[in-house]
Each structure stands twice: as structure tokens, then as C-alpha cells.
Amino acid sequence: MLPVIALVGRPNVGKSTLFNRLTRSRDALVADFPGLTRDRKYGQAKYDEYEFIVVDTGGIDGSEEGIELEMAEQSLLAIEEADVVMFLVDARAGMTAADQAIANHLRKLNTQKSIFLVANKIDGLDADSSCAEFYQLALGEVYQIAASHGRGVTQLLETALQPV
Ligand code: GDP
Ligand code: MG
Image 1: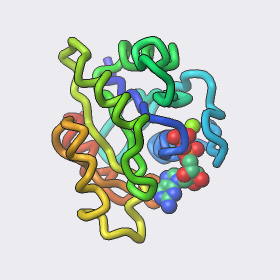
Image 2: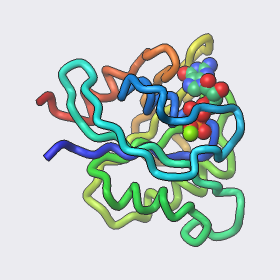
Image 3: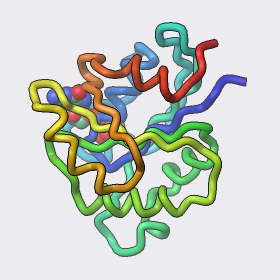
Image 4: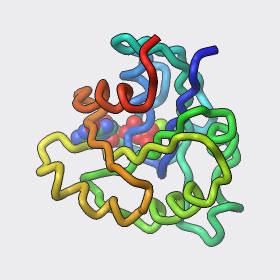
């Protein structure tokens, strides 16, 4: 069985862009409008020597009270189904209350799953200083990528997956 990677995070952090890069498809809707991808979307990916299933989600709106209740149902299901959860944040926008709410939820999950905190959109930024604040989310290492350019993606997969 191929490992399943779920992409979660608040809207507009670049989940669908990463999904499209990993699956080399244009299927996932990429837009500047938050929350446009409503349903879980599955893709089979072969990226370098890595083969896996990747699940795109519409994004979690953590701005309301009670993240456990408010987390989009499909994001929760995607997390349940996954072997690996990639939690994307936006290095350009910086840390938001929604990011903190999602991180709190992920830290509370009683699970064996590996969770990777991924700071996207590092292109054109001083990546280390832009990403430093995300260590406050207390999810360990902050992996730096630019999904739209591919920077950092192979290194992230190397850490998250074993080669097939
Ligand atoms: P989603 O809502 O999390 O699925 O985010 P999208 O994939 O739809 O991307 C939201 C916006 O961020 C789009 O305008 C993307 O082009 C842009 N974006 C995604 N990845 C990157 C990146 O690595 N660098 C930059 N500069 N923009 C990005
Ligand atoms: Mg999307």
C-alpha cells in the first residue's frame, strides 16, 4: 500500500499548488480565493523516487471558536486517513491565529502519524528569519518550501517518506 500524505492548513497557504506539483496535474483548483477547494481530492504521485497518495483539502478555518468543532469535516477525515500529515503555513503572511488553532489541534491528536510543519512561499524571502516564528507552534522542525517553484519539496519528501 502506498503511503497517504494529507495536506492541511488554513486557506490560501498553497496546499493545492503543492498537490498539483506532486501529482503534476492541474486538477486541484488553485485560486487566490480562500476556501475554494471544497472536497478532498486524491492524487497518485510519483516524485523523484517517491510514490504515494496525496490528499488535498479545502482548508481549515480556524478563526472561529473551538477548532475541534469548526475544523472542516473533510480535513479531519483526510487527517484520519493519512499516514503523514503536512501542515502548511504561509511564510509570507506569517503566523496567524488560524495556524495556532490548527497546531493546537494537531498537537492534541492521539496518533502515531508523522506531522510535518511546512512553511510555504519562501521564494524571495530570507527564509530562516521568515520561518523562525513558526517554531512557536511547537510541532518541531519547520520545513521550508516554495511549492510554486519546487524548492525544498524533494528534501521534505526525503524526510517524510522512504524511497520505494
Ligand atoms: P490553498 O488554498 O492552500 O490550496 O492555496 P493555493 O494553492 O490555492 O494557493 C494560494 C495562492 O498562493 C495562489 O495565488 C498561489 O499561486 C500562491 N502560492 C502557492 N505556492 C506559492 C509559493 O511557493 N510561492 C508564492 N510566491 N506563491 C505561492
Ligand atoms: Mg486549495
